[in-house]
Length: 277
Length: 199
Ligand SMILES: [Zn+2]
Ligand SMILES: [Zn+2]
Image (tube, rainbow over all chains, first blue to last red; front, top):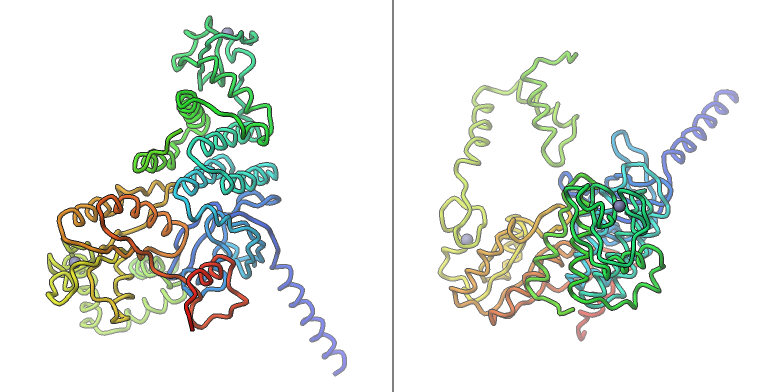
């Protein structure tokens, strides 16, 4: 009899331990989400140690959900997940930072969407890159503290270049991407397929080579080699802003081999109420 | 590979794609229908087929309707100077249940989500602006969902509408009924504080 009880107890302890092993804690930023079933959502989370992962949050579309406000889009949260058969399930959520400033400003929200889209497209699932996580967290934080179209654009250009470096696609800006010669202080060319700036002699080597002004090249180099506190005080002309935005978008699309979706809405938002540079 | 007859497996598959129905419920429903009378099964099949055939979008508000003009838009008693903008037809039902709202609706059929490529052109936004231009509307209530995409959609609409000289309002937010304060997130609490009223 005694032995029997002992076995039962052991089985119980085993069960409790199993239940605990099925649960794990992570920190994550909600990159995107999709409605699922009646009141659920599937979240794509970016985590520092497990990379990108998908998890289901049950009942969060109900207004009475306790979790909903803690796993809003772009929020950074501490989460307790349970391993599921097809997808892990979020059982508890506590927001660390909801980035509230992104909710009240359409332009900031749109730039945040763009940053999240870039990270989502560059990282494969379970591809852990803590520095990308920190970059996104810092990027969202900085967006909330930044006012005005030109400052938001500058921050985003910095974000793009830093992300490119972290994921191994840093464009060549100091030596010609084709012949390797150091670039002189004159107007140059840029080719997304060659992977960076081209010297004037090499412009014909790439069919997608487009002019790159010396000013824009200088700014690109500055953004690529400095930290954000130094970058944020830069003041650029509207022309340089446009040039950099177009050039980097072309380069990012080339590297990703995919079309980016959020820039289209960004254009519209600016169109509705253009903010002067 | 499957021991199930093909028509059975197919129906289970179709049921599983519905919201709130898992594989177990899907099998249960399928085997129930397998045993049910032919009349019952035919009635269900016809109801499903008729669903799409008999439904159109209201030409004014884009709510789902059986007639070109939905029952709300056709109702002479409704206040035509107020339009409540919602994301989905189900939101109209939710607001109608309160019996407190006497104005008209406009159903967008979604919310702006830049990352998913859902922009204003994919929603009934131009149609809303057209309505405001041609009809004597005084107020637009932006009743999109109280989340990031809903807020963004409301902000975008407010920018479009304000130059037309129409007042825009946003549904108030606060604490959900039946919840505990300690579980509220900071944003809900902050907005509930903003919206506090004299007791
Ligand atoms: Zn060269
Ligand atoms: Zn109608």
